[in-house]
Amino acid sequence: MANNTSAEKRIGQNIVRRERNRAARSEMRKSIKRLRTAVEAGDAQTAQDLLPETLETIDRTARKNVVHRNVAARTKSRLVRTVRALAGS
Figure 1 (cartoon, helix red, strand yellow):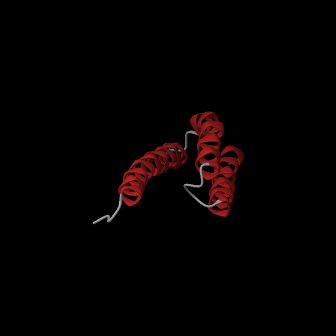
Figure 2 (figure 1 turned 45 degrees about the horizontal axis):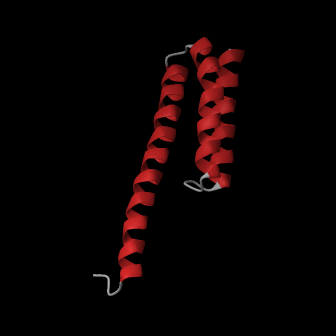
């Protein structure tokens, strides 16, 4: 338990930030899942439409430091590769 007022305030701030980060991470994961589902279904047009939106969501999450920027870059790279492979075939 917190021993002083500033420690209590810090606990409250951490709770708010944790919830905000969880929401941002969840949003990113949902976006990625939607895109991967379209790719697995072989729907190239939907995948092409979802790609910019998904990349933007990943960038936003990295900008907020919810995920590391290298993780974001790697994820984006893999998604772009899979969508291009689908469009090429």
